[in-house]
Image (tube, rainbow, N blue to C red; front, side, top):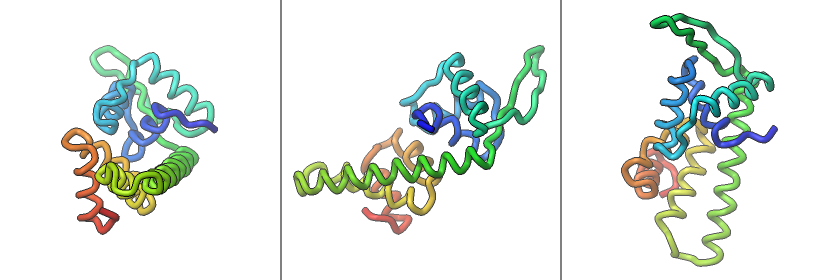
Length: 156
């Protein structure tokens, strides 16, 4: 299955708790540091695909202020698919980092350090890596990630 960035972020947003549509939009925005802003129509297309593939399922429906809210939760298959995709992305980042170092040692050291740190974090915990990336990107995307990895014992 090809997991797109919106699908990856939607699955990640559901790791800790079930969420309704607007809650998912807000969490994806937060996780991506504002880079990905899902429109509701896009979100429901993503949710339909994820549900059809058995990666998410309806948790419950609630009526709030006269409107129906559908809450979705991550399935075990969804958690497995998310972990596999996080591993794939981390492996790709490691390959890119190695090739960039071989091409130009010392160039963009901060960026390479951040990519390596992200790979190290992802190897230990994909969710920690994604959380660190999203939370730190708003301040200083690369140096903050490298600092976080160093404090966690990763590569810095």
